[in-house]
Length: 161
Length: 161
Length: 161
Image (tube, rainbow over the protein chains, first blue to last red):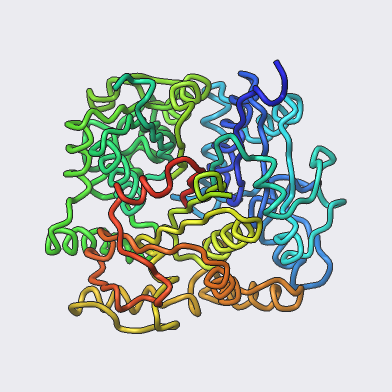
């Protein structure tokens, strides 16, 4: 089967919320497992999911972007979009996922890497947040603008999460 | 017109917010009314919309999932995604909808049933939240994984709400 | 190239959050710049982005809708979906955008007008919120229901933001 014939799923990963990231990576790995070409375009808070350092870290070019980076905090402390209970909800979710044998977010991200899910970082959001390509995990293939992403994802479905 | 020729709209209903559920069901019923095949895939907080018991209820397999179920609370107490004012906003919205002769969320859900909108529950989210098929309204046709949903929704547009 | 052959991107702009509106208009202008037909369908909180009066204003048919309009507040005071810090976050974002030479939200909206991005307002949400066509900027071409929007956006990708 040539590349042109493969089904395609693209996701603009805007959110940095624990539950939405879990949804994005569940869709991405589920699609890749049934042989879709999958393209994830990380932007704004979503960039948190592909940072090299998991957990809180002062990353960025100046104090303002570093402060923002600290508060974004990485997947280990990503808040839940609802009923967050000052962070407790993420821990409850993780406990429920482990107990019920559902893959955790970090396991899903690792699975995405192994399934060759394509990951890109949004150029404009990196400018705003003062991030550089070296701040991200090595699986992030490229830094893209909107036009290039639209071109790559053309001919398939695109979700905004 | 055969099924293969019908237009298709699919929505991944992730949110349990009153306003987003209203948007999802407005799109679903609007599309079904002009003869689209409509597929709703409920996951995470969105599962709240298809629970049999409307309003707060302790549903789930153990105390932790039951507690979560209680806080999710069903469509009758679903929060608004913005300006929630501790729940008052949902009531204001309902009042505005009634006053301006716009269908309320419950009316939209009932319309979706009558228009044969297809409803599915997400297997993984049910595992996490400890929910079973019997907890949902009978119009929920099936419990699906991501791969099956992607297959059903292929060839049409898919939204993530 | 005829209209039928042009690529198409449609966005249902539901959110009124500063960061999500920025994402929506970045996608819209980026797509229009590479010759896509772009259709923006503003609904619920998203209607805030196309109001004539920027900043807080009491707009609407009665006190309840006017009060809601006041709290929605327009793009100048639009909250950020996360880490809002009682409004400070929007200001920080603006500062970061200016400092790093990224277009601000208002500049993006102006660019969308110049690039002939099509803008529509959702009829139902206008009914709920007591808004009329005259409350919006003149670039808003039409007031549409769901069925008409689905028809206009058919054959291209549609995002829900």
